[in-house]
Image (spheres, one colour):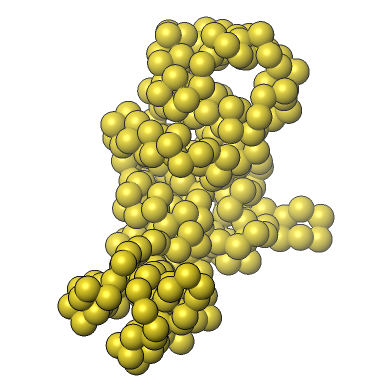
Length: 293
């Protein structure tokens, strides 16, 4: 599905949520939609889904979006916060499958892969499930749908590490043909799932470009080294901060990570008991990383 926004604006009372947004999302693109709270991300996705009336025009595959029912059958959406519905899980799955022409077994299979047994929770109200269970159910329904547009708002925020890894693998296999809009702050998700980044700021497009270049400038990592004795001069000279238990750490940019890890191993040799490299969870660099960069 191709999406084109032309001078799209939206105002709520005294608040302007979108200010003349011009944006084109190519068919099959995987777009990370980023921005701080209040930047207009939710308003923009709701407008694309036809849930809000806006000024300007929204075109879907070259045709004006005038009736949300023209896009609803082609859309799958996972909100950041699941609705507090009193309906039971089996009722929700049954209704969605009937409307979408899906096999309930397909939803159950994906849910099981994410760690949710639908049979065990089928009689429970959606609102009585844990946050993680609700998220797994919504993801299973969305991924079982052969949608042309998939909008995911912080899809793994409530998932444990194992479920997150299974979701990423499942997503790569199932959603390969869909246009994707992903709202997330997790660098590991962005790096593996998207090819384009759109950043909103105060209701306007502040950045629109390839993901690789954007993330390479902002991806932060932390190198942690545990040494056996004392304070190795090499770590001090290269800006590592001393922690407890023999651990030393430093926040770095992607380029520094590639050079510092082998350099540390070569310089410290047998003094190293352990070495860990982990990516930062947020897009915004910490002051320490900005200083290092």
